[in-house]
Length: 132
Image (tube, rainbow, N blue to C red; front, side):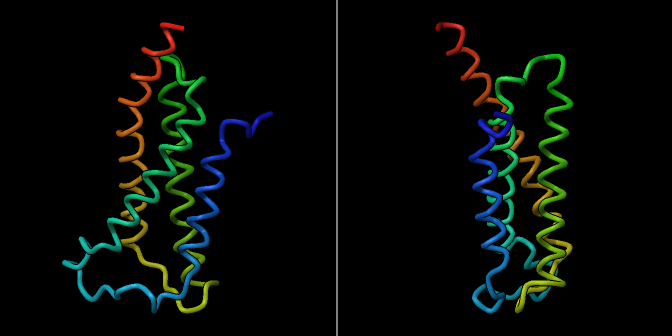
């Protein structure tokens, strides 16, 4: 089945959608550019980094030399587009939320961070696989 290895990424996508749809008044408000490094942005880095990582983890059996760039680009682009989508939903659909360009930027950086964290995990998985 196509979605077999991607259930963790899909489940995490739903969790992100639920979290980004919560009313904004339960989160601290960002007042200036310097607040960009607030806990809110760390959360964005984490949740979208995890999504990118989980998508790549779903690709782990296909992640060979010839198509690594394509798979990484696919995972990062999917994650960045999903981040933009959640910001648009916050701006136009979710009540009590507002989309934020800096949040979308943090989402994109998180997507790259997820890829960066996947590399050593993949190498470890690949070395263990060689012994089986």
